[in-house]
Figure (cartoon, rainbow, N blue to C red):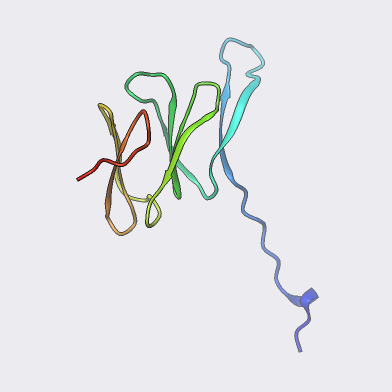
Length: 113
């Protein structure tokens, strides 16, 4: 008979965050951090207008301000493990099943059509 105390324990998965350290300060002090995805972060991108940060997460694509505030966050039908690009006003992402998503950089709204 197996008891709960015999069950293996696994470390809890920590949410992934993105932060900003200020290069002007010799201490590289953490200025802010924000939770961008509850699973993992594949990449951090700067949109064409350089007025924010786009985070390519496994479960979400998130746009943050330069102060770390969330502007928008979108999810897909599956995890975003495929191609990812930012061109012009569009964020293009592919999920695990190779479905393509096209989101407006400023609003996060999906392209119609």
